[in-house]
Image (tube, one colour):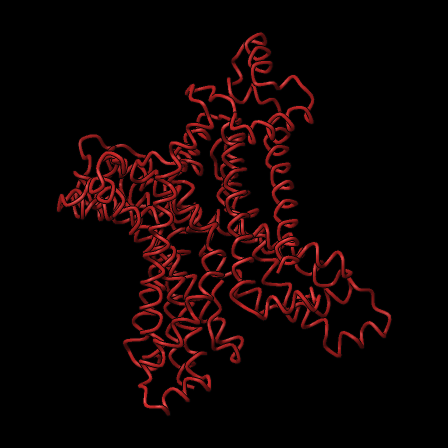
Length: 278
Length: 323
């Protein structure tokens, strides 16, 4: 099908962007062109291509490339932990809702509906009021934010799998409900969960950036893309390049995971050519 | 219809009460002593005790909750500890900015989403349709605050066309208000709403174009484009109500972020300022009012659906509650 062929470039571009991000982040552990925290007051706001600073320096003379690489690591860290948390809790909740009794199932489904409707940023704000801004605050907030959505995505397909013959067979064989859910339903949801995780990764990177821009996420000395953009705002007239680069990084990272998710979806489930707007 | 309204109203009240209890308990139990959070760990025990009695924190949780709820009804939410303003009147004063921001972004995105989505559905197999999809994909990948910063950099700083931030109230100058809202509205629309709407319209339009009534319309001499515009857009725009309601959370997030980027004195900025100065009492009321607002809109949407779509009413009459 034409639609399918045109989707493979998505997968390739997405995977390449993600690989680049992971590479840059991991490389920053062992090597960055300069120390990301090293100040160089004689070289403040150097434009790109100055004195070996490939993308220039910021308002305190710190190397932009080094900070972007360290920021990539921070984004990945937050995204990996929060996506993992949201997927595990969300899938568990979704399976429970799908497999539970009628009352339990209805209540959970309704509760996730209400929770999805609520602005997730409230969680981050409430947490930050008490615990102050940090990566941990951001991670916990993103997990709580994403869990209802993850559960909601899983409930429907889980119910469909539960209605199939082999599940009935397993039940007739005397398997417990939870055994069936984890041994039969969960593996069948594998492709769905992989695609969902990729999309959530994109969402987590975006959310982390927004939270750290608002000052609710990672604090200095930890470089984060959102924080870099916040700091760039005060010198927006003098050094526009500082506003551009961190944003490009965020955009490419998010685009990468979104394309990867889309590509995986059509690869893993050819029937599913149509897009679902979440 | 009456039954539908009644049932949805019960859901609304129950959810709102549950929401208020969750917000209240979270903010009371999560971080320990509220007075310590507000005053910082260095405060003397006397100062903390004084603040506690000032905020009514020395009473039982149930008393505190009831007096908060009572205050909501009476329009008395107490005073901000750090900034000294009256919380309720501050919220009222900031409401118009936040609402006009959100509503304008919503309307603009609605129009853009319908236009782009329809165009891309009509040219599904061509490069043009794919290009629109790619643009939507890019828009979703751009952080809202970054779009705001780019607009400030290029439109305000470099070209000098619009203010870099700040807000002129409608009562002072209509053009001033419009000028201060253009970039914030653009930032929200481009990155949050328009891409989602256009992708949704596209997929719903692709389905509509396969319907028999489109073929009928074309058999009667309409072109595909005309048929899509007369039948498809109506279908898609009603369905967009649902999508818009589902996007309420991201609209709120977008508004908060954009108010920070453009230093707009709205509710989002009030919230962030309250969070950074640890004003538990302010955060509590703002969080609950946001939840209430979202729930009420959901309620209205459910009712509107009942009015617009006879199938929803019939389902209600038949008593089939299962979805």
